[in-house]
Length: 84
Image (cartoon, rainbow, N blue to C red):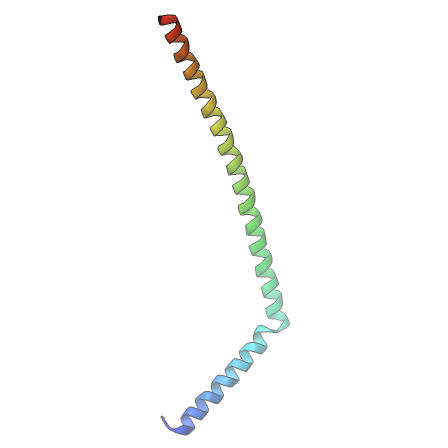
């Protein structure tokens, strides 16, 4: 690769980089970023709501399971007392 080719390649990279920065900082790009961020926030809210609902359901299931086990333990204790 000659020096001219290297210089042309470097100049092309600088030009492409400068154009890329201007493109990323444009008003259209900022609007796109805002829309994408809003979508992420909506998704976060949805996941948080689903997680809260799931946690509440798990707490209900755990409480019911403890109640079932307590009834079984009470019934077993009653049988031991009656059997003696």
